[in-house]
Length: 358
Image 1 (cartoon, rainbow, N blue to C red):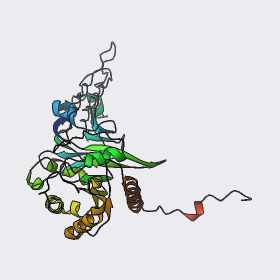
Image 2: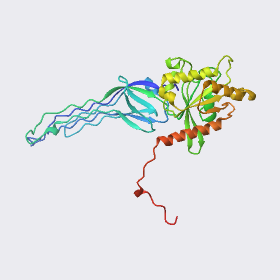
Image 3: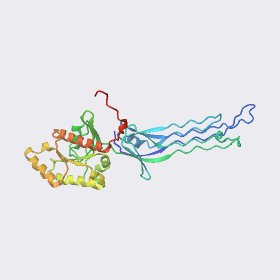
Image 4: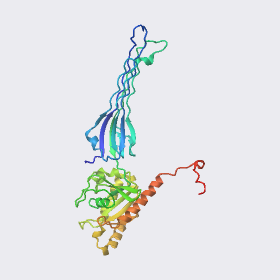
């Protein structure tokens, strides 16, 4: 399936039905009085988050979505039926904003979350609403209210705990396939990964986190070079960034330190908040480095890069060092989750007492 993380749609809720002017017409009822009913309300437009979806491709090809209008009121005290609502299923992590002003209106962050993105118009009043002791034969009615109409921009930011970034062919897809259930395409040419891949890493029973593998970044990505700039927004919701570095490039003239600095520079240009996120260095493909040269090469790399954070030495192909990396990531993600959810204050008066004799 084609990965689409941006779409524009036009939505229109249904208009309300008009009220009715009608009077009772019965034999021997000279002044039967009004019996015109109200119009029905227009249909609403809802958006629901669905965890089974991971792309906005459906909205690329069906741009306009309209709910039905309410039926008009009728005589004999009959009210119009409400218009049918429509529900749009969207992936979890979708941001809904106004296409004209850019204002963010809603965010779908939980599976099954339902929001009203356009409200249907209320039905108009029939003449039975206007009768009084003075006016016993009212001929007033009101039209239905128009439903809301909007032009919306849908933007998908994947919800992942950990994001992988690095140059093309650094081994990001190999790493995510080694530690998770994701099976991305892996090949020996740049930009094999064309869209984000999500993988769930299971550490133990009820212990897991989500990793996002993005297309490789190159120098100038924040200005539009390569593919990575299209997907950098997906890193904005992650808790931790793993900077994957190829320690055994095919071309000997390539300097991994210069490449690593270029990636960090692109992050800083794109978003300062993204640059400030916790970032760990993952030195990959060490199985291709002679064992007697590893320590010296790693020490020289970290010294020239002037990196102060945690450094992990792995080989995604042979899975060497991956288990230690996974455990460290889980501890970091768990600590951040605990910090985000402040402890709930419990009133001591309502704490359940332990059973007697215990």
